[in-house]
Amino acid sequence: MEFLQWLANSPVGVWVSSSETYGYYITLSVHAIGMGIVAGVILMLCARLLGFARDLSLNIFDKLFTIAKYGFFFNALSGAALFAANGVNLMKNVPFLLKLTFIVLGGVGLLLTSRSVERERAMLSDGEAASVKIKVLALVTGLLWIAAILSGRIIAYTISY
Amino acid sequence: MNETVILETIRASWIGQTVRDIPWMFSFLEFTHFVGLCVLFGSLLLVDLRLIGVLKIGNLRSVLKFTNWAIVGFAINLLSGIGFFFSNPVNYYQNPLFRAKMVFVLLAGLNVLYFELVERKKIEHLAAGETPATDTRIVAGLSLFFWTAVIILGRFLPTLGTG
Image (cartoon, rainbow over all chains, first blue to last red; front, side):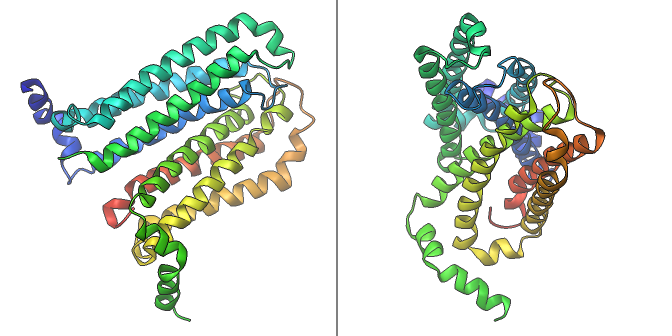
């Protein structure tokens, strides 16, 4: 608790919560763009694995995910800044804790999906349909990231300052 | 009909009433607006970065199929956006940041129109991995720039009113 209070009083915490600097809105903007990059790219991979544009080489997603990693990095940073400003209340906020859980599960889902894809790579490049296992993993992963977005939205309606 | 009458008609419409009267409707629309953002931005990253040449793999015909997802994302956000606007039209109409956001949506739309009318036929014959000419790359870059501006302006709407 003392640590969370210290975070709130740190320069980052003060900058985000002060209304004069627009720090909160700048941080939210970065977080929204990062969300569009990370969740957007993951959703497109899911669509491809579920059978959309099956003739597109999966190799294109390797480079795209390198870019999505930067998006995730910026969202970890902007997320940490938002947390610094109001950690005391966020730690007690169930939607926030759910959001973090969904991000971890969504990450695990993505990892399992990409591992299965690696194993079936040669077949998939030929425009063949992915296995049922990959399709289920892709669908669950996509839904987990949408759940992360949903719980993130609910934070805005349940958090106290 | 002057502005006030038009805005009041929009406010009194069944769409405006529905969004105001059902307690969870506005927040539900916000959720769909965010998912739509991801679908639109994610598909455009794939398409535009391929056109710009950052991604050099994949034949353009397959990549361009993802513009269908951009249309899906845009449709979700147009519908949810209409819901927001109709619930409180005066507030949005008077917000300079909302007007700026709509200008950028319009610019992005004109950019797409130019792409469809002029650029698409130049690139459809390109081989897998081949990067388009500079004019196409500029159009693709503008697309990402305009939509990024739209996201930022959207997040700043509450600083000058409702959003």
